[in-house]
Each structure stands twice: as C-alpha cells, then as structure tokens.
Image 1 (spheres, rainbow, N blue to C red):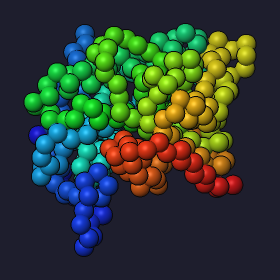
Image 2 (cartoon, rainbow, N blue to C red; image 1 turned 90 degrees about the horizontal axis):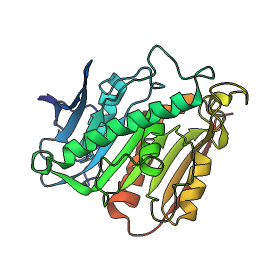
Image 3 (cartoon, rainbow, N blue to C red; image 1 turned 180 degrees about the vertical axis):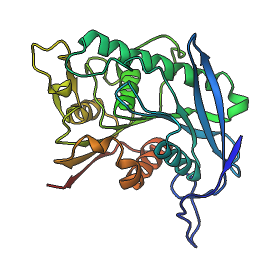
Image 4 (cartoon, rainbow, N blue to C red; image 1 turned 30 degrees about the vertical axis):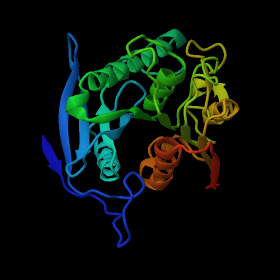
Length: 296
C-alpha cells in the first residue's frame, strides 16, 4: 500500500461537502489481483482517502487503448483516480485482457472479433466488481452507488456491460448507479429501456473519426470491409436514456476529435463532479443536461 500526496487542491475557506468539493488530501492506494490467467494476472488499483470513514461511493475506472494497449496505472489514469478520491469517492482502476494486441481494431478486423473483444473486457470488469462486492468489509463501499467510468475502448466496455451484454457474473438484482462515457458507443440500443437505464454522462467530439458521435460505422469503415460494424454513439444513447426517463448529461464538442476520449479528465472534471453529485449521489430529480463546446 502506498500513500499518495495531494496533487491538486480545491479547498476553500467555506464548508466542504463530500462528493461535491475536494475534501481530502492524503490518498491510500493498494493493488489487488482479481483474476489469474494462464499468461497474466488481472489487477485493479484501489484508491481511498485516509481520512474517509464509512461506506463510500465507488467509481470503476476503465482505460482506453483500442483493446490493444493502455494501462490502469498510466500517469493520466492514476492522476484522475487520485483526484476522484480527494472528492471522497473510492476508486478502482482496473486492467482487462487486451485481446486485440498484435491484431488491431480497424476495418480489416472481422466485426465479430471486435464484438468478442468488447465482451471479453466487459467480463473482466464484471469480475473486478464482483471481487469487491464479495469483500464488502474490506473495501467498505456503498454497493448501491457503484459508477462505471470509461475512456474510448473503456467507454465501449462499460456501455456494453451496462446496456448490452449480460454475462451472468454479477447478481441478478445488481444495477450500476450511473456511468460516465468518454467517446464511447454501443453496438445496439435494444437493451436500453426504462428497466435498464441509469443516470449517464457522455463526452464526445462531433468530429470523432474513430467512434461516431451519433450513428455510423466504427472507424467509418466501408460497408464491404470485414470490420464494418454499426455503432450508436453518445448522441443516440443520450436520446434513448432520456426516453427511458433517466437523467443524462451530454457534453458535445463541436468539431472535436477522438482526443476527447481523454481530455475531459482534466478539461471537464467539474462537469463530472456535478453529474456524480447531482445525478448519482443526490438523485432527487431527473435532469436532462446538455452542453455544447464549439472549437471550430
């Protein structure tokens, strides 16, 4: 276990509200192995403020990288996870199988293989969450307030887990409290309805050339390409969540590229905190929030 010093301070002279303000400084981080594979072990880094007491809301952080690269403990993921912990959240930054490493994830890769990669990552995240649920006295998290966060491939993974793919790992009655997707998309909207919808926040550039903002093929592949796969991006998913009567927060970047799969972690952190506090922690009313940034 290591203790991480304060990286950023939002402290002020006014009273601090946990989950809405930066309340804590020193953060504890410990690494746990949640699954052992023949060729590797899957781990997650668990962050929690030293001064925090009681059961905390948990944010499960899933990195991007096109299912070929990326790491739970990269500099940007570690900084983001630490900052969330300073606001009072417990954080589990997870690794998952990079099943497309050495293969790629472009238009020349068969679409069924792409779907299998997304499902595989969803399986792994499910196992990490179950590991924590099964050890509630160790991790002291509020099991009714578990939120998914994902960037790019990680966003595709969490959206798939929340709305598309049921692998039977988590208990039937379990439901995530919310999700935050950075430049993510889904292969279908059929499983998103009034019974499955949860408060959802989306960040996406309208000019994303890899993952469509609305409805379009993955990587905009030609219809005859092996990797042709229709995806439903943030705009389409937000409309469905709204239709299901749940809160949503759509942050659109006009002309923004796929770089907005990571930029919100520093450029729009306050918007994430607002969503987490208002739509997940408090959740006293349904909110439909849309914000558009024009960078053209």
